[in-house]
Length: 265
Image (tube, rainbow, N blue to C red):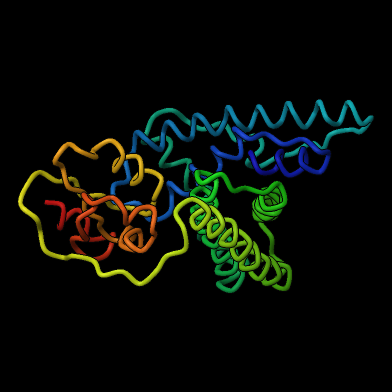
């Protein structure tokens, strides 16, 4: 619903940074977390309604200023989420990834899913690029257009395939932003030897792949005698010169991100 209004508002030159940030964060939250929390998602759903109404108002105002009649949108644009968890879970069935499988078939449903999960990946990388100060109105515009397309329950196989390829192109553009943000702030990574055995003393283990968070933690713990170790996808952080210079970034522990619950324990 947010994307449906944001897409149309963007076409009229109206953008909202706060909404952009929320959408990326919410989409990222549904991707690969190992600690999904029901209450967290209830809060995100409530926030999504507020942002949708904000963008609806912005779109209608932009239409009025341009002397245009706003589109009357339906579906996700008018959905009223329930508030109790059980009711939400029942309501969620209308948005299941397999909706329409019996009528449109596996290829159509599969391509819808390919685009959707591709956009979740785009949101994850765009979220990190945004934290590093890199974002693009053009990227947001294509992202919202793709989500608006999915909201129409598309059945045209060629159109879906086209958007699957466009999503790949979009991800490439976002990776360029992320690369510029990371190398611009921390330098170009170089091959670096990383310790995988512990050093005696207090320590903090950090997972994920947010180098800005890692940097902040390194700054806060510098000179305290607390060592910091990376885990999972943060391993490459050791190769960035500006992070490697912190002497208390001691090494890496563990393997892939999905092993957090076992390895942290």
